[in-house]
Image (cartoon, rainbow, N blue to C red):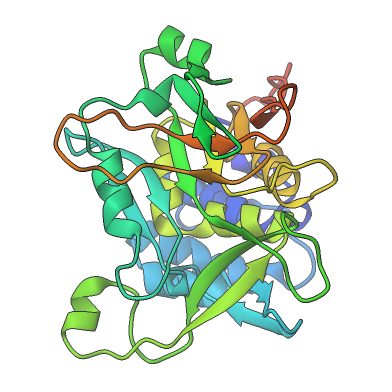
Length: 312
């Protein structure tokens, strides 16, 4: 572990700063941790509050510090908390967390099928993808992450999120999420108990998408299980040539070392089948416009740091 006392918190994001401060606390520097860290500007107060939130497991307190930004379709900037973003965890047949979906279609449209897709015992998508050409499904081919999955014995991590475009923009330059601007929570239990969420569509550019994935509780847990695992970022067209959403998110996640494995994103429309019975294969389909077009773009894992600061 990097000694947090060697980190200049003014040069990194609040999320990593909070985690380093938490590590300091766990190293039993409770009284002097924050005083011994080099900090500049106005980050100190935010860091103190966020570090306490992490240490005491107070997600709401952390939310008050870690705000995110995005844009409406009309171009209006909005600020929101990580917990305001609609999401559902994806677990395998043994109940292990293997992914998260942010694809909110209103009510329960779509996500229950994806939950069932994830929890099948057989997941062909762990090692294979199915090209879809002119409406016809071709034989499956090895996925870019197949070799790493076979070598590690662990499935890839999946994040499902819509690709989108703000007014006047290009498809694939943004991610699309649903953000709750009402008084209610995005958790189903709260909705059943009478809360009234007010969902709005918010578009995130590549960096904003990476920040959201880093800060959101479910994806943070998912990545934290093993940051070196392959990440399949299923977001339609976000890795298409000249688009910026997937490469921007991958660059951010790699630069912050939230994900240290390869990140893969589709170059065209991607979708999963609707499970009809237990045990059916779980495919991942990707549209291919021409025979020589690759289905996924791979953003390679960063080189491991050759030298790390030593504890003092």
